[in-house]
Length: 452
Image 1 (tube, helix red, strand yellow):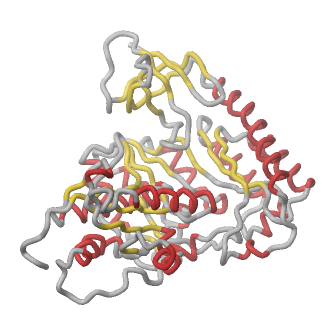
Image 2 (cartoon, rainbow, N blue to C red):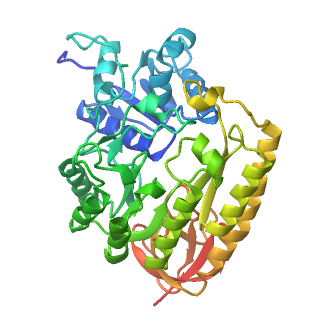
Image 3 (cartoon, rainbow, N blue to C red):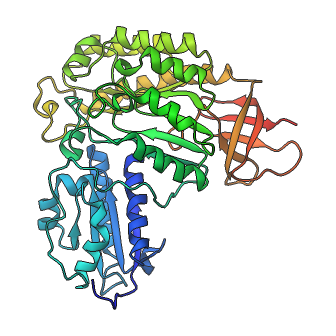
């Protein structure tokens, strides 16, 4: 490295899921360690990084639109010297980006976040060593950091594995991120200690399939043991589990969730469909009966558990019978929260060339029916929480300045509704947790008043 390094101001735009956000936070730490300065306004940036998602068509469009938007800030019209693209879109379409978007100066794949500072120094001619490609086959944990710059408030996402081995027929993640690789428990605990001791009392476990954790390097599902070890860290206040599969909802996991006071009585379990023929065609590992059994077990042993899921409509071969089965199962399962998306054909996946395509207008109408059904279920579930008292972590103030806004054990950030809180007596502090009585609700939000 040249000792006379340029002082570089960097803007990092993070798109996509929580796992992408963790990668962005890791890159931010690397850049700061290299004495670069992070800025929030693209007009102030010497380098702009767009960390992209490439999971489905809408995410790819958002990424491309953002790349072109940031390109407007490059010289001669703006201050920016270089535009760098990282993330899933960069991994999947590196050559296309290089050939078709000349405004992009550097492309980094998903296994090369550790090289972000080097890549920028190369652009400025400040790196003297050999320069290899910054895009390679996925399948590494080299970019993972145990210390990073957390961009959230009272919580932090903790990625416990990279990649995926489930190979669902519609999903491009294994192509982009490679096979499932569990981090060592020691490494995870080290990061969790750093996160909790620097202000993130809520740790949210994330991976493409958290219930698969440990199968590859420990030979068995280790999520329950990981949770037990995490709960021993004094500064960890709450552990939330996201992205589980029903075949991984074991008796050991349910028992740990039930008896461990630091584990949120909350579970995110994307089921994708309720028709067995479609689930089989999707290459899912479960059936409607397996999903039902998992839900019944969770609700029996953890009566106040809040369950979230996502489902897909319009998958190839989804006829009226299959869709009706989905609606029937949604009505039976009664998830507290449910998100729905329309099938997006992705190149390289098995579903891309499947027969029995569903017309977009038909899939759109099915989406509307799913969401209308779930709206009634969500309202009923929220009404069950009326007059209950729950601990709420205050995160911000509403736009109109009337309410404080926060979350309880039952709300994951970014995907779930908020709880709007009125202070009964003294003003509330951002970042603190208060007992709140729920006094009003809609299908999507809860309103409460602090208890003395």
